[in-house]
Length: 345
Image (cartoon, rainbow, N blue to C red):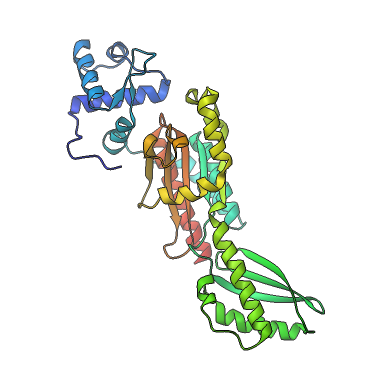
């Protein structure tokens, strides 16, 4: 959410807001003027601190919980902190090396890389990690095979460009040989390579019944793949969220748990929140669902433009260690991009 041009703090009030955000992130306790005066050398009187805090509250950067005399950052305050006050961090070299080693040792397919990336993100950030499996925006064919199982029963094996495999049993009305099937598979692979389901649907009717049957089954398999792609979400580290004091009450925790259990919804939202280049930070009320409006999401896309792409992200309370979370997501996104480019280009 862009800041308006007039939303600019003086250096002193910006420094004060940085202290309030930092102390609240560390303690989860509202921050009072006396605490700031005792713990930080600002070179001004406690009265001046109280006055500046009152102005920050009036301008919407901090808020006053009704059960405490202290103040906590508002969504606007966190946004100003992230955009203006936060000091950028890099992932420590030993952690970066660990991430790279784990990912490059993984010889499995893209879905396993996504699961491992979620595990690494959760471990390094102590937050909930979310990753989607890298995929094309629409499934495209790499090649297909036809395998004779019985005299009238054939297995169609469809390999997509993102290395996912779909299979379908096909029953013929007439006897067929493996040689005939192999010839048909080679011809259709050449014809359909790189095609989407919509492109296949627009092709003219095939010359033979068998060719038309295989083409239409292939189209249906790909349409199904396009529909279910957003559900391929990996989630790790839920325990890190459950121990946060913000979610100690069942009233705040239950709606969130229901949303997390419905992973399909999160799988659809995550790529939308990562549409801007680089790391995107979505704070509190900026989130699309009411259940997420006590939370921050830090997300980034990865992969190859016009090729396979996915999303990595973190979910945690708005009282999040932003610099750490952003640097971790940025590095995982960069490593996953390199991995996809190296193994699928």
